Image (cartoon, rainbow, N blue to C red; front, top):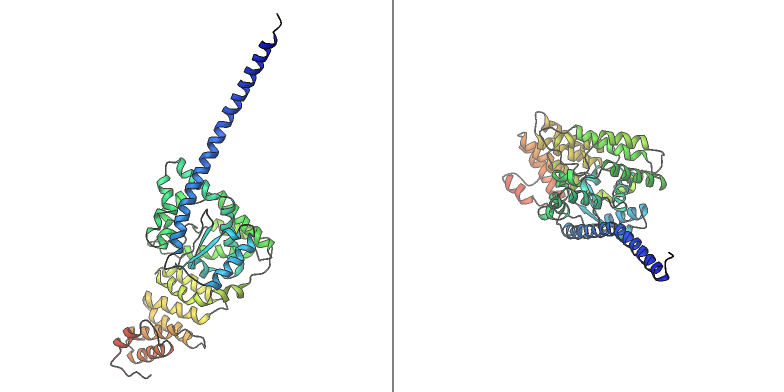
Length: 385
């Protein structure tokens, strides 16, 4: 018997309802997944904003309009679309580290800037960090942690770990690196983007691999009883250095003079911070490399002298004196080189040479913060050289 019109209508209605139900059921997991991603991202951004607020107010933040403007110009050169969304914070810590937070806060440590030889190397680092922002790599890592039941660790990464120093907040992520570190594929993709932008902007792409080869040599010089710490969230890798060298495709500009002109007002302090780490094997490799560059040799010789004086192994005081004397013989010698020369002479028992050098230091630096301490130590000596 043929179906009547009402029956046909009911069948069509039921068929349409069933089909719509299937569509809704199929769409439900996607909608739930999108909602979960949005919730995760909101939570991550909230923690990142708290992290940025604390970093921005750190006493160790380097506040230099010239340096800030220079770094912003480079970021905009690399990624004009996102540069207005990126805030750059330079933190005075002697560690090779950079961090790109998911909300656009970029953190650079002075130890990284000290190790850069030219603008090309710095542009590669900035491009690498911007790639993580472009690819939203932090969100992927956050979700992996949550899936593994480690949300409490994830919160510490960009929020809770900021309670102490800036080092504890960023470089101190060493213990949390397995949870925070990007995958090898993400790191390689970031490297590829950095190299791509180097080539497109006319820089020498070979400089990226050279930078990582130099960093690897520092790591090899580490005394094994000491934790490295210097590399934090960017562990040194021989494989990475080789890969970057092999991937280099073109020569081009390095713009070393422009870079060194910008960091010149800070270099001496950053060198002292590096020596203060007391990882003398790594520091020696770094300073010997910097000494081969045509920039601030008197400052580098002073820093080498400081390294030997503080290490104080057999023959080190003599080595320190040699570098202090080389530094003080230069027309642009830092006043601190005379202080180092005086202190090393005092440790060798040459009080006359010590007083002469320290008086010269106080003459060149009348507002020296340690002036009173030095005058008290040698108050029984003539003030004149």
